[in-house]
Image 1 (spheres, rainbow, N blue to C red):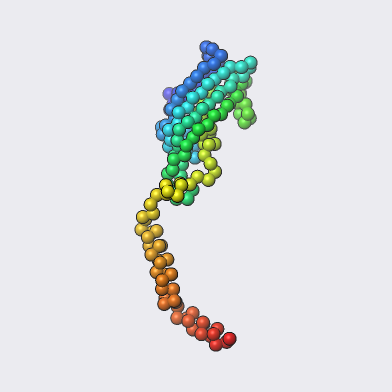
Image 2: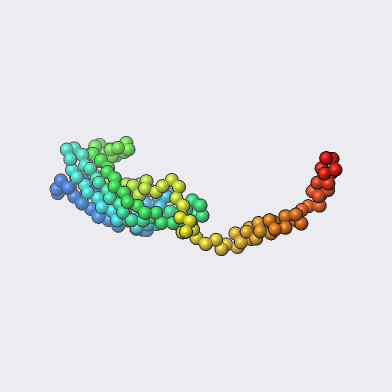
Length: 177
């Protein structure tokens, strides 16, 4: 049994017209899915499956937080997720996904919604995600301290630390005027 087998929904064996599922997508879920955007997080997932004439409507509700890398400092940051999405599923001969309708083989009658949960969460992450200014991690790295010291020294002693060859060229320019 795979790590994501718990996210299989048996559409063919539904006992009533509406069935509900609840999961918690945690760090183990995100590592099993192996998606590029989200590696860690904790989401409460509610799924309501409603059978209609010839199709199934899967209504997802996701609520929680995921961890993504800040675009500015690359440190992990928390991104809240609050999403509602609907997926339409029909039975057919072979698996197909045209973006609006997912067709699953009628002989199987099940769909694993783990990747759909991941995608719905990833779609909630803004294109640009950065910490608020007050949430930026402190910059205490030795490289940053050396760079700041270099800039301070360069601004304070800019005239005294010039190359003597440039001083001679400046004299030539002043004499030519």
